[in-house]
Image (tube, rainbow, N blue to C red):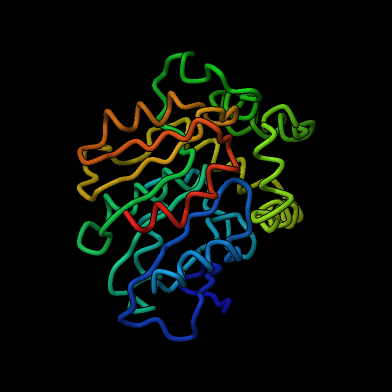
Length: 264
């Protein structure tokens, strides 16, 4: 079901999820926030309802200029309150990863576990943060401010070298819906992606040490979008993190381990 709650575009797997344990899905950049079929299947198998919220400036959610990662988590709380969610497994893919962690820091009483797939780590201020990224142009432009990031968006084109063969195979099979949804997100314009990049390259608004829940960091070692070094940085900084490196996976194909990650 799709509805508007606290001004945000919210998708839920059931009409009534009050009192339910929930997989809170934090979408990648860019996506619409729609619940993707493989996410729904993984949740169903484990008896979890699904909630997915389009971040500000994505799909039907209004823009929040200058937002931080923590701001998005703060906006998530009233949504979960209104839905009556009992507990949350906060799951983030790529650009959703920082927001999955932020929700755990903001709502420790509700978030019982976090799982990230190919999440960026907080910007270090060092050029090494960009090392091994195939196409870091958007993030580099974000460091120069919103105007520079918008100029970059005017000529930005997808670089297929960001994905390895396993990624393209996943997009042709189980995760085809992810590619289709990314295309749908582009129809709403670049604001969501721009604001995500700006948020990732400034202070996130919270410290990783504040995340007291257990965190599983699932990372493809062949990832050319968010390289494995980012997962290793997160593993060092988070108090209760486990690193799950997948040697054969890239940025998209690592999502095929969602079901297994939910059983841990």
